[in-house]
Length: 515
Image (tube, rainbow, N blue to C red):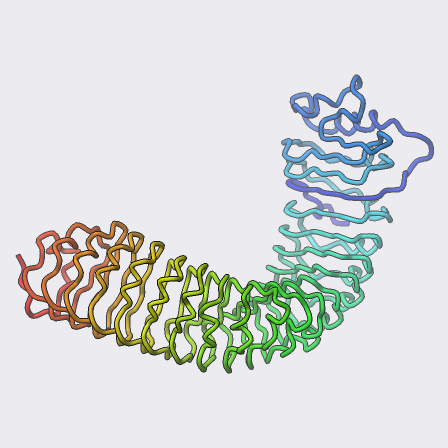
């Protein structure tokens, strides 16, 4: 075993049901005192001061005994312990089930090779320990392991095929390393595996090895270099809850039965090259919270079934090739926090159903072909923080009811066909910081109430048909961006706005004169 493998600086958590290596009774107090002696300056540690020959072992701080007063657990988390970690004495504690040395500062040393002979070891958690080098093949000897966590280290190379011998493995965490190569053939032997996380590595190849993972519950494979199609078998998995494949190079259509048979909670397939249509039944079991298909090449319409997906919190399908009318119920999902359908080819209106979206904070629909008037019911979506509707074909008046949105901070309505006047009621949206209504058909005067918005730092009303004078109230704002160009404004530009920062803010208004 490579000595660089166990550079134990932050975390070592071992849960093992160890058979006693020596015959006869052991003095648990002496074993713990010997363990204490391996630390640097143990006398300065408050907890370890209770570890002395005068106290019964069950009164040692950080020690938990079982009903027969044998040591069952040791927890020395966050004690700033240092020194070379020696486990020989600890492993003689016959009834020890848990040893927690999380967040300490042990010096690098070899993890004893004897550990790979511990046939009863069931849990090995060495996450965030600055481990280096390849994953040891010796892990294949630990046939009783149910949980193995090597995440957030500096490990390199491929997963050894010997991992396929760990048939009792229930959880395998490898995320946040520099592992590469293809996922080993032996993974199909891990029939008890429910949670497998190799995300944030450099793995390549396809997902075919997971065709046999029928018991998988959580499968985060994001931020790798995986390619090929999502196997059709994924559509038959009956336990799948979490599937995260974003930031890979996956292609082809999705299994149309994906999520049909399991209580899926989270599916994120963003930033791939997936094609075809959205599977229709991912909300079938009534448990879906997050559905994310950002930046793919998906086409077709949003399945009507998703209008009934009342548990959905995040619905993001932006940057695809989707089209058609958005099912009206989507606008009114009662628990949705974000609806993001930007950069597609959707048509039709935002319907009055949006009044039911009481938790909706972010509404992003720009760069589509949506049309019609905004419904007054949008004011009932009282959690709205950002309304981004630019580059569509919306028309008619801007609802006065927008003034009731007390949390609204961003209002983007540019590049549409909104007409009539700007509602005075926007002056009640005291958190508004960014307003863009450029390139519309707005007329009338600029409401003086906009000057009472204390957080406003960007105001773009350019390329409209606005008339009248600039309200004096705007002069009191500390605007980073002010663009009133190409309107029909008249009168004197307020002195406070006749400064270099706004020198290009008023062109295209022939009726203006500077003070």
